[in-house]
Amino acid sequence: MSIWRVLLSILFPPLAVLDRGCGSVLIVLILTLLGWIPGVLAALIILNKNK
Image 1 (cartoon, rainbow, N blue to C red):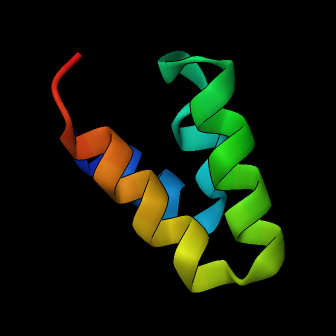
Image 2 (cartoon, rainbow, N blue to C red):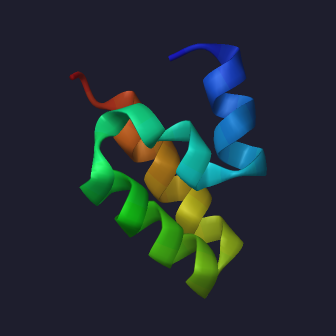
């Protein structure tokens, strides 16, 4: 996970997980709409997992 991905996940979480698939983007988008912090945490967790 690069520093650019971390910054992108803090600023706009759904865009950071765009390459992980449609399901990840939808989950992060819904969590971001419910609250910014859950979206950021979900994006960081998804980015931390191996492909």
